[in-house]
Image 1 (spheres, rainbow, N blue to C red):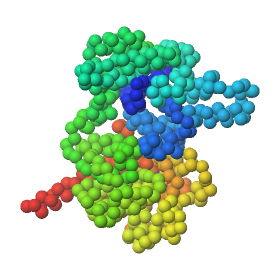
Image 2: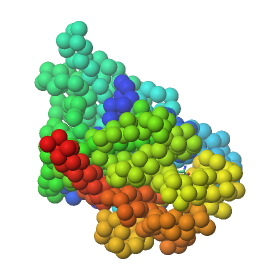
Image 3: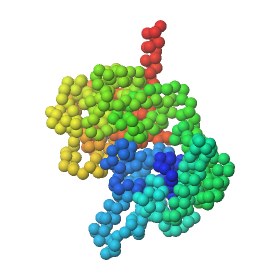
Image 4: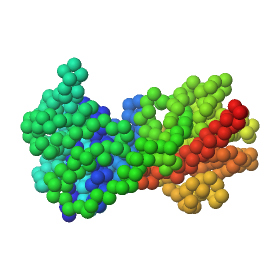
Length: 545
Ligand code: GLN
């Protein structure tokens, strides 16, 4: 079967959840046996989001092949349970970069290089490359931004052309829009949607299906009105009401019949919908038998998108443990020896996530010390693991000056340091240790217990490493190195044997947790936190008795 393309655009405003709609539709089609992938087209001029700060962009999602990408790719992987790669995220920066390089090589044979056709052709070739790979029946193409944005125009034009290139019957255009409820008028308003559809019409793309975000249900008269003014059938007006959890959205879309409309319009041949596991997962989310509180100690706590994959991983691993993980967001800049107890008292687990730059590191070191000394389950991720090692080197091994050379270049005990191959790199974009690397686990450790096997692969995004010439001291003093990269002998996982659960990982496990396969380390960390909260409760009850 020739691949079919579904273009998803957004109108009226940003933040309507286009990525979740794409992932939900993808899930519903994949659950019928179709091979589905999703590609995100981002209209910004950065080559990738790797150099943007978390306030601008939220988390940078990293793929197996080491691409630094938009966080929507994380949703695609978590929903579909398949891996994405560099080709799943295209940016205007990347497109122009490649077109300009081709121009410098003389590839355009003396032509004037223009937005149309050269930029639009480059966009189309990126989309076609996925479709033509033969790996997928359906390519969902999410166009970032909002219709009407100047920078989005080449993308919409490319989609318009593609409908003719690959045949209209092989493409579908879905437009996500907002139908606001005006309290004063007591009614839903369709005008913004009409305008948005008119705008996309002007560029030549006719939406086949409208997905309407709304706070209250759309009755049949509103649906009819939208259909009539936007040239679609009544059944092609799909309501998307606010959901408690993003994982409910596939269920809501199924109720609204989005997948069926798509199947009919694209004449898809599918198997039956196999969806029970997803439903069971959503039910487990809704009825947790208990709750456990875990502190997340980071510097972007007011901007939770910076830690999106971690938050989602806790949702997946909470469901496995039959509990809801309640996160206590702790600003690391505020933590000091004298207030750490106040900020962290009562939590059943402490997670220190990844990060860059020195701000907040002292606070993170305090959080690690508190977790280690109070025997509270601890999970350190990337910078969080580096902090665990620094804290241990200082307070257990007695190397007072131990630090990462990222934060103190001149320290005489650079327990975390740059590898020689990173020393002469000046460019910031795409130059870290990125993507999938092997890790060999040591038997009898907590890591081995979690994964249940010796060889694993995890994704990385960092420049600094545990210093191989100083790591002997950590081992001498009781820190266990439970995971090593076999090719370069780099420390991947450290843990403490005389602690209920203290694990630091140099990689980012949160990038691989999906609904189908919650991450084993998160599952065990939450399990340890539950155990901690039970023992604590017992202790408290005894003390009160
Ligand atoms: N800043 C640290 C490094 O580059 C950690 C990076 C991270 O936590 N992702 O090694």
